[in-house]
Length: 519
Image (cartoon, rainbow, N blue to C red; front, side, top):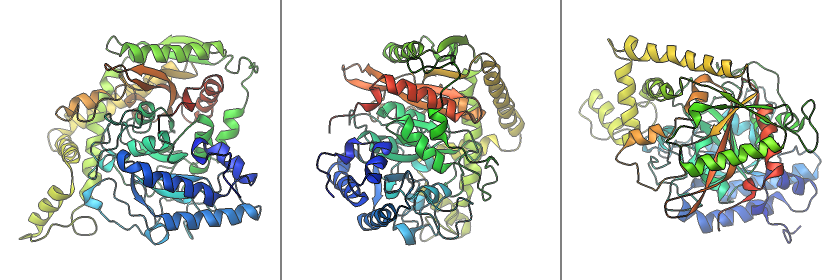
């Protein structure tokens, strides 16, 4: 076989899968081409933390044998890379799991996360009820903000990731390595996690498609925990179709995850292609009501971002959608609510890193208490320490009722606001972020400014709703550079099919998702 006439880097998941099944090229050839690109280009980008060429090629050879034997599924042989927040069985993959932190430097996990097992060859005795993996080839592990805490990927303990569209800018976070690798065409798809916007915001900044599913749709087993009531895994890829293929394989009930939704498996790719009642080829979105919350279009929204989002919505109107004015009155409260609840849960989850069982242990401590202090001081970065201290404070005696309990009550009200909206619309839409990607270091001295950038993604996370970022054109920085803008679509619980259908229709009519940065 030969890749002549077929550029593996230019193809997304669906196109690669089709080419592999048609025997136009082999998984080994695709994997070799991408590994060569990673070696050649990623040093300047910083998207990958760990790569093992030998193991990746071994998985590719096994995938080719499955395809040749007629056993391959729709994703078999297609490369994928995982955010380094997912545990990977070190004995199988030779890939450590660090969560972007010195605390877990070199950690060799004895198992695969459910997401990894379901997308890959599968783990023997995994026990997740998935019946084996999809057969994707694991290319490597991707950089991220430490313990997924951040909106810029500058909080990684190893190195910041750079935006492929402008390497002086951030790629977004915390799944910045995932978004940057897909945008730079180093891998056709990647996994990410979204706690308060960490799939959607980097997808927007890097011009790729990313979806955070309903809380509970994808197992959290084997994900390094940040905020357990908010963390959710999802894919980042070129298109809605690619995301649908991955999310179908990732999702499903997992008895090992107490928060996993007990629902039958859903073919989200088929749901994406299903024609709405009354829809036609020319008007595939006929009857779809898109709600536009006034709170998502404040005066502070960058004009170029607003213009790109409005242009994308106008395209959806041409495809038959109807725009409806709605309101999410507690949108502004989502920031203080999130930055009470998420740090509180982080404080609890990260208490396990004590230097005793696993993770970094400080040397030469005089006693146990000093070992705890030194291990955590040395192992955690500044942003993680900041959030742990905030979380410990709001959970402390005398403050729990005043802060944490009140935040939980407001969280319920924010969820109720969405349900009121969904009485009038099928999908809520707006920008993903108030601006395009900012310069590296621009917010280093003002973490609150970075927190405020999450204003449009936090409400859906607090409500546990599915949301996605869809490429929606470009805005211009002060220097005149064209930078990607994402359109955010939010659906009701388990309405991923509706979101993917709407995004796919938009992408069939536009080419924003096909644009790529200069290599």
